[in-house]
Amino acid sequence: MSATPSPDLLRAPLVVEFPFTRSLGPVQSAFLTGLRERTVLGVRTSDGKILVPPVEYDPVTAEEIRDLVEVGATGTVTTWAWNPDPRRDQPLTTPFAWVLVRLDGADTSLLHVLDAPGPESVRSAMRVRIRWAEERTGAITDIACFEPHESEPTAHVTGHSGEFEDAVTGIVTPARLDYTYSPGRAQTGFINALAGRRTVGERCPSCRKVYVPPRGACPTCGVATAEQVEVGPRGTVTTYCIVNIKARGLDIDVPYVYAHIALDGADLALHGRIGGIPYDQVRMGLRVEPVWTEGSRHPDHYRPTGEPDADYDLYKELL
Image (cartoon, rainbow, N blue to C red; front, side, top):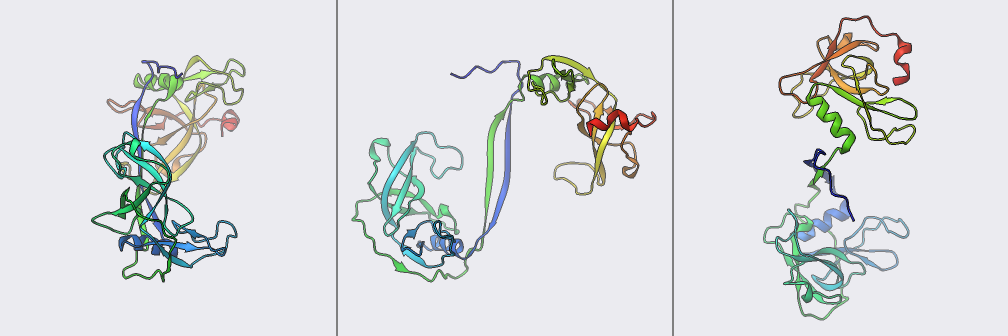
C-alpha cells in the first residue's frame, strides 16, 4: 500500500530525451536491411542453432559468427502479455499483446507486438505472421506487427549472403523518458527558501554538520535530519573549473567559471557560476556572494565580495 504524497511537496513533470546513434556491424546491418526488403535473417551458430534476431558473437562460445540464413515470416507465439493501454510511440495505438514469436526455422524468439481484438484471442502456441509496414527504412519497425495466421510450421531455412543494395549502416533511435519528479521534503524546503532569496540546509542531530542542499539524512551518520539552518548568503570558492564548451540552451559566453562554493555556516559545498570577475582571476579562497535576477528562484551567479581571501585551513575540509 503506497502512501499518498503530501500536498506540500513540490512535483513537476520532467522529460529526459536524446537521440541514440549506433553504427551497425555486418550482421545487424544485414538484418535491418533485410527487414526493409521483407526478408528476415538469422545467424547459425557452430552447434547449428538459428538465432533470430541475429547476434555477432556466439552466446555460448563467444566465437564470431557470420553464417546468415533466411527464416520464415510466419511463426509461433511462445509467450505473451496483454497491453490494454498503449503509450506514446508504441507500435500500435490500440490495445495489443506483447509477444515472443519463434519464427519458422529459428531456435530463439523475437519480441514484437500482436494485433489482436482482445486477450481472449491470444494464446501460447498460436500461429502468427508478419504484417510489414507500408514504408520501410531498415529498422525493427519495418515489422509493423504480427497478426494471427493459420499455417503449418516449417523448419526450412536457406543460406543468405547478407548482401543488399544501399545497405543500412547506422541507426538513430530517439530515447525519451517521461516521469514526475518530486524533490522530497528536505529539498522542497530548500527550493521554497530560495524563492525568498534565502539558502537553508539541515543540521545532523548526531555530528551537528549542516548540509546544503539538504537530503533529509546525514550522508555521514545516516540519520534523519529535520532542523533547518539558514546559511550564507556569502561563501568561499573551494575549487573550480573553467568551462570552454558552450552548452545547448545556455545563454552564457565561454569561457566561464563553475565553482564549488562553501556558504558560510555550511559543511558541504554547493556549485554555482562565478561572474563579475575575469575567469583567469578566479581562485581558491575567493570570497563571493549571490547575484539574483528579477523573478529568479535561484542565484544567477556569484560575484566577489571584495573581502580578503579565506585562509586555506578554513575550507580545506570541504574540498
